[in-house]
Image (cartoon, rainbow, N blue to C red; front, side, top):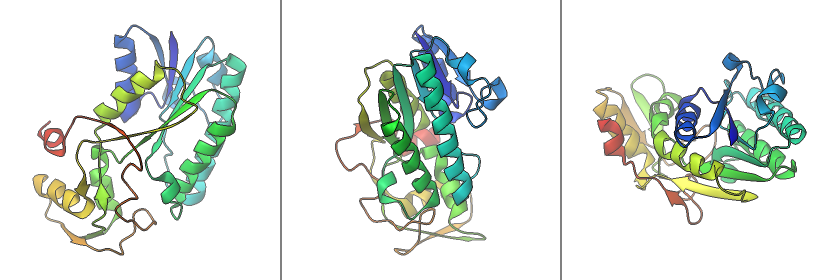
Length: 246
């Protein structure tokens, strides 16, 4: 089966391409540096010719409110239109657990717009909503403060490794469309501020995390239900300690 992975040269996409190739499928890694650009449409029709499944794991290069909205709306429309022309039978998209609960954030408003386009697009689909990646802990720290002090909520978080995300996406790509959403998360429920402090300490980073109930997460307030699955989720296997040991 031919499968196209949009964002196929990135963190998740490169792992997913390898997993699907190892299962014997013809996989094309679509990204601007391989001549496939969902923003301009360049190379899309040629890449999708003969494809049965498309997995979209691409992310916006900018998190600025208008830029990220433009990215997901333009990319989504171009991709879905090209899939319709090619007769694609399953559109798989990677999104974020809690997107609908984080709408004060421009990034999550853009992810909601992407999900809405997929729902209305007419292509059978599965939206995989993942919790925050363990690989993103450094970025969370960087976003939450400058200098020696980082202010973060103590809200619950259930982070997942990129390996676990890619493994689920491979299974989903080879399954029938859900025409709905599924949630995936890591095996441990932790506290955001405490987890980031553990990460910084193990990295021998001297910055200190201050637990602040009012601290915003990319512009949105958090509570214990915001960043964790709302229902029954498929859980990964890689713990924080195992991930750091790698």
